[in-house]
Amino acid sequence: MSTVIDVGGIKVSALNDGEVHLPPMYYPGLDFGAHPELLAVDGTYHIPVGCFLIEAAGRTVLVDAGLGPSSIPFPGDIAAAAGLTDPPESIAAGGLLPGALAAAGVAPADITTVFLTHLHADHIGWVAPHGVLFFPNAVVICSAVEWQTPPVAPAPGELEGRRGLAAAEAAGVLRVIDAATVELAPGVSAHHSPGHTPGHYVVRVSSRGQTAYLLGDVVHHPLQLNDKGISFLSETDPEHALRTRAELLTALQERNAAVGMTHFPGLDFQRITTANGREWTSARASSRE
View 1 (cartoon, rainbow, N blue to C red):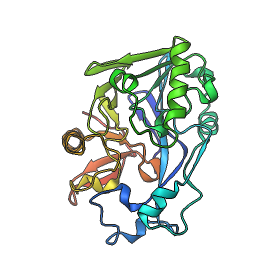
View 2 (view 1 turned 180 degrees about the vertical axis):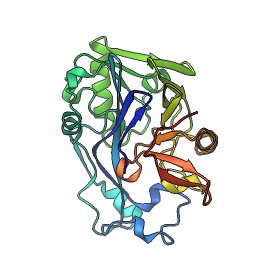
View 3 (view 1 turned 60 degrees about the horizontal axis):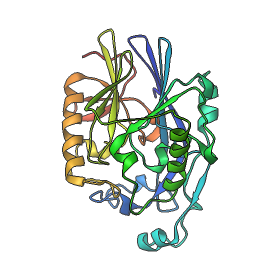
View 4 (view 1 turned 120 degrees about the horizontal axis):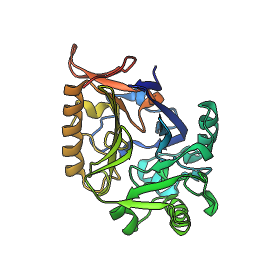
């Protein structure tokens, strides 16, 4: 397992804020009957709520802000639609990020930039829980189209997270972007990769010929590496998401880059290898382009 990697002197750490419990219906095209090992005894697939800490010279960037200090009860309508007679108590529970940051030796006040790959509830929760900025010295950066277009049918927890973003805007620390590529720090850049949401971005870390990519929700399940038929229920444009995912995975395979994914089991950094067919391999060594 490798949840911390060095990218040419830039330290990148995967941090977990909690866990989400999703019924099979959230993964259209995935045959859970052929993969019963994926489901917990409660009938749901458990995934982490990942965030990524980038420590570069003079800059400390947090990519995504987790679910926040909250637990979302499992909605009865979703349990009924999924045929779950005894669903988990929560569909998502956060709260672990402060401890994960402390374990990494970083305080909230040390964060200089919070970059949000997109504005789903499990990526924005620690921006300003209960309206109080959690990262007092950070600028918060997100997609303009996502911030300026409120969801018609917000998912559980999404409105609370957006209220935190409104608090960041009121404090003058919210910066919205719409460019294809945006520099976040020396060697750290965000790249527009829509499909999962219209304003979704991935993050590239590059230094001294080494590189890593943080994919946000472009890849939502490890099996999507080889199965193009698997999508995700909340994707705004599944066809566009598929194209974005296929293009990125092919590019990353060719570049032998380290890859971090928000919901990959264990939050282990990966690399795509082809020695035994295309597969995920733990990224224990530095990556070069």
